[in-house]
Length: 260
Image 1 (cartoon, rainbow, N blue to C red):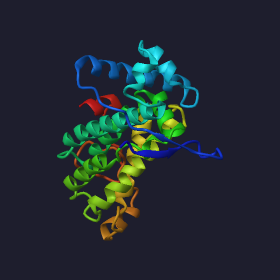
Image 2 (image 1 turned 45 degrees about the vertical axis):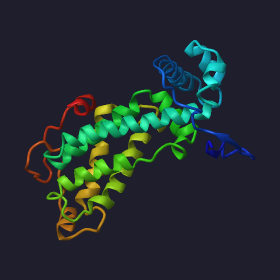
Image 3 (image 1 turned 120 degrees about the vertical axis):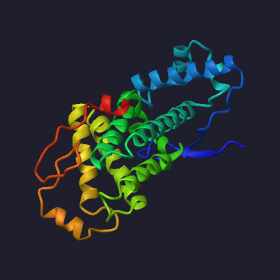
Image 4 (image 1 turned 180 degrees about the vertical axis):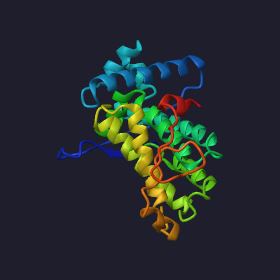
């Protein structure tokens, strides 16, 4: 039996119960192509019209199919939104995994730079759709969680434990991910992408690394406290030395970091 959840605008007096899961997944290649066309159309319609104004009829017309064919797979636009959001989560996890895999032997600052860049690029692509899914429709309540992404952050922190011995990688990964995700959303979604990508990645990376260098989850030790008495390492650092008050040439723009 398909799960039922309660959705709706929190400002409205009543919330209606609606199924948000696809009716079925296609097995034949032709049907798979149809579902892909439906989801691509849904992304365009939701991104251009917003959640409230978008309709399944509009999605069907955009996909070049009948609305009846759409309903074979998706009972409503909420199911389309949740499916799109789940795909976003999957792409994000894959992008972060690639970034972390290539950063395990790099200095912490560079690893965080690549992590931030990967998250930035995934959110910047289809920005209008992400604004709908993050701000207009509570898709995150019904799609898989971010544990796969958090695990990758923990991997990075564990690999660079020598630089942050006072931080607990598991606990710190939750807050590091929260810092990065929150600031990426603020810069791209809330500010409508007004930030320069390079500047944004630099600032977000400094915020995440600053938390770690000043103690991280587990509280500051003497090493962490000593960092507060210094100007602190400029972010990002591309060489091994962390001379206080110096600024090394940082890594490339987000596109380069995410793809390297």
